[in-house]
Length: 241
Image (cartoon, rainbow, N blue to C red; front, side):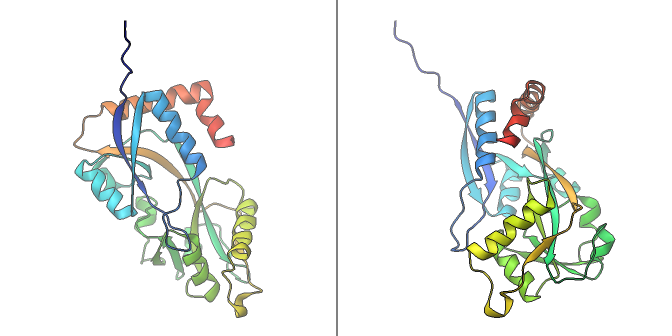
């Protein structure tokens, strides 16, 4: 008797693209690759990964092209998208030039500041309501180098950085090493670095999403896989490895 190989369901998965200093699309972060592989195995499906700029990811999910991953939640997106339970959480950190006199303990400390944010990123309704009201938004490209150059030159006061890192000093060391390795500073900026405030701006919960008009079955299966993975410890283990 000849056995027929099981054909896995192919699911389009839309991810926001990030680009390196040369403008090339950067690879998916290894920790996110592990998460996607976990869900492919848990759901017995295969993701057809499609990379777009973030605004197009949001638009195309709403149109039903496929599922999304890596998006936080707000009221505007809930009009067009169905969300899974949180898969993990990113920390959003406040970064300034290391000679800045600014202090940060709450969003009120951003009053009157120009704040660099990746174009299309949203941090929930409360913070969205403060954009260009309490603080000025400087939307920019997803690569850190673009915003770091503007921060060092004084063209923005603050940049917000999403990171899985839970310790500000670890991110600060990584960003300053990045500045040196990529030779981003100009001659007059050579003595400047960046500092990261100890308190996160917020904790940003990250989800899978689908069109609000799509059937809920896949999201329900993802939620079940999240529950199983947390109970078994398999999902938390991915954050550590």
